[in-house]
Length: 423
Image (cartoon, rainbow, N blue to C red; front, side, top):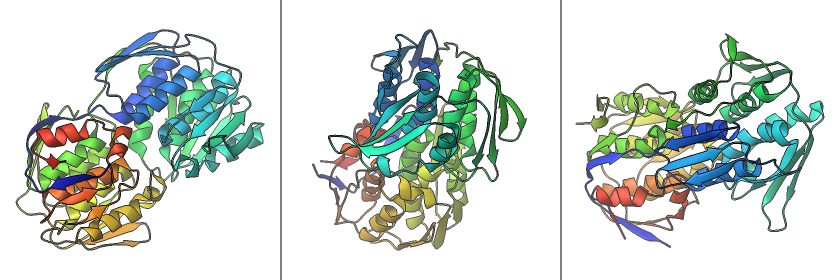
């Protein structure tokens, strides 16, 4: 159902939602143990539900409260060829393919939306020569299905560094559970290095040993077991970036719950906002952004593509020209986010264009608004349009907001609590 977002001024303090990236990883480690783990600070969403479903398919049990999740690893034996419904979560799909091969000898992976179009050839090219059966098809309801059958073999694995870090993480999760030792190496240059570090951090926190013999090259002993470790989830910089960028655009928003020491690559939003002329006020408890005047800059998005759309909006309202580089992976998200970001900015009265894998933006003083924006079935596009409407001359109509359930179901409540107008 469409919703109208009107110009307004945001003011107040908001807590960042739990890190989706960290939650995926800690949930998986917990699900692979033989014990009970409780994660506090948990926020449910469509992507989190996908990872919970896949863990249950592999034998774990889960209990969910308002802000906590308890997982009982290895609660039962998985089916011979379990069905793992990944929803529209790319992280879930790529993390679980090698895990399912290691734990259950494969599985049937169901994919919805554009997930079936996401590249998976990195795994196919690794696993098929090692005897894994690989078949991409369509289920009876029209959803894409990937069936993999076989056992993940220990050995030497080499991955290019310019593919999604999710492939690296999937192997990092699975290889310690094999009978023999393995070597996993990522060839430079390594993109999204922070997300790989986040995976290693979660795994080693669960008692698994990895020896990094060279940068992004690990010797991984086999016959290891994950150990239960309770934890508290950190705030998510990728979601908080929406509020931090709004603050840079003149709104009085303070964001709490964000760790200063973190492997989250999207913490780069702070450096990018400073490059645009903003001042960052940060304490252990909160972050506030101030900006008297923003100016154009060149920002590298290769390690943090998820925050490119909201930074593009910030650049659109900065003086001069900006260029967001390394945006190629935006094309294979829930929508073609590179094209959608450019389209939204231009519909709103901005000036943006795509040049290869870059987004080039010529700043304007104010956006016109007064238009209807598609939802693109993409949560980041909805949030981009909602923040853009705050400073537009006229209201902005968004075709729907259901996509927010993928990552931040409470976004509209937070938006309204801060003074945003959405009806």
